[in-house]
Length: 86
Image (cartoon, rainbow, N blue to C red):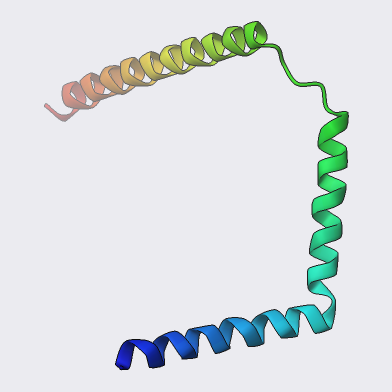
């Protein structure tokens, strides 16, 4: 019985929230925003599969190079600090 009371409370809260948003016009504005966004996305030029694979490879190589650089600088700074601490 306790479950059904909680469920009824949540349904009421969600219903009241929906009603308030609808009354204030937020739902209409949100629907207009979604429609405008879909129209803008239709105007976009999307990359081909080959372009996508090439760009993904560039990003992966860049991440690996940046990671290697970060690890090497960290290692060198660790050696310098250990040398100075002795």
